[in-house]
Image (cartoon, rainbow, N blue to C red):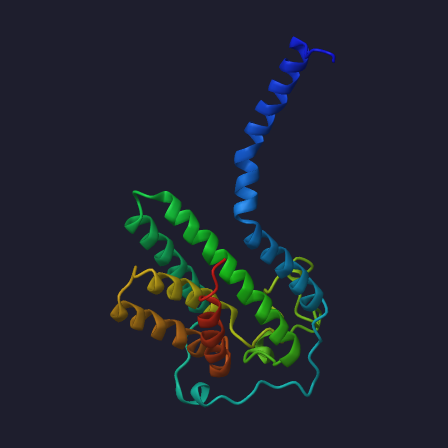
Amino acid sequence: MTPTTNNDNSTNSTNINRYRNLTPGINVILANSKTILIWTIVLIVMSTYYSNEPAPTADTVPLNDLLHSTLPRIEYKWHHYTVLGVVLFGTTTMLFTERKNMKNVLDFVVSYLGGLGIYLIVRGVIVNLTRIPRPRIRELYDPENPNGKTALQKLTTLSGYFDSTPSGHTGTNMIMLFKLFGLKKINAGVMGVLVTVVFLVPILTRAHYSLDVILAFLISFGVSKFKV
């Protein structure tokens, strides 16, 4: 039997050290593998549908909505401001309440991203099946861009004339709020105020129909129960 030489031992030790150096990165990938897989599927679903969105015709008109006809209208920019506000509120709340345990904050972020990914997959399927024109389709329509997409937007959920049901902005907000509420990071009163704002803003800006918002609430509630 050939004895093990010092060179062999040195080589083995080097290989072990290399593996140990790689282990933290590998563990991070494995720990978040579900979230990574979910977002890979998101990109596939979105790029498959949104890049082939149908172009509106002269007969394409928005649906009637009772709340649109009864509630006043506000500027569209508030639709985006609401999402930014809720996401900042959620992350700030977690950073403040869990400032002594950043692992909990990172776990929350990963869980939120995983839940958001699941929501976008479900949304992509429903949008593809319903193809409901957006309430502002008459304002958005550009004859030089008949399907409402730039080259970059074809790989995203941005824009599009039939990107309506369910609301992506509402789902993004509600998954954040449901997760915070489940962790008891916000009380019922604050939750009620934020939910009211999240519900009304997409309708007041005419970004979505009330059906889009209600469906987003239901789906996001179900998604928030998944452990990613």
